[in-house]
Length: 70
Image 1 (spheres, helix red, strand yellow):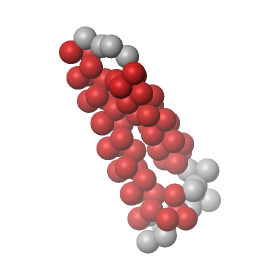
Image 2 (image 1 turned 180 degrees about the horizontal axis):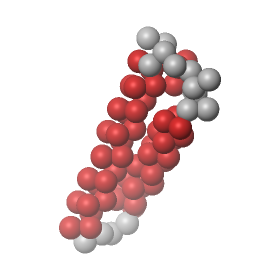
Image 3 (image 1 turned 60 degrees about the vertical axis):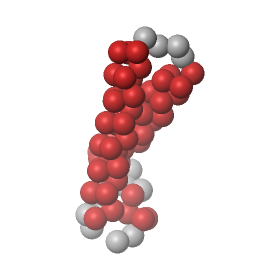
């Protein structure tokens, strides 16, 4: 297992990982820095955690997969 397999710019999963991690970062920032109604806060936190979990799963699949997107 090589961490260098994460960088696969020709693989759409790589760009999905980037998008999910950026969106979960933005959602976490919103949850922390803005006064939200309790239900909205819970929804934002659940979305941020879901994005992070999905991103981690995709990163794991990129590392495990020997395919370099070429």
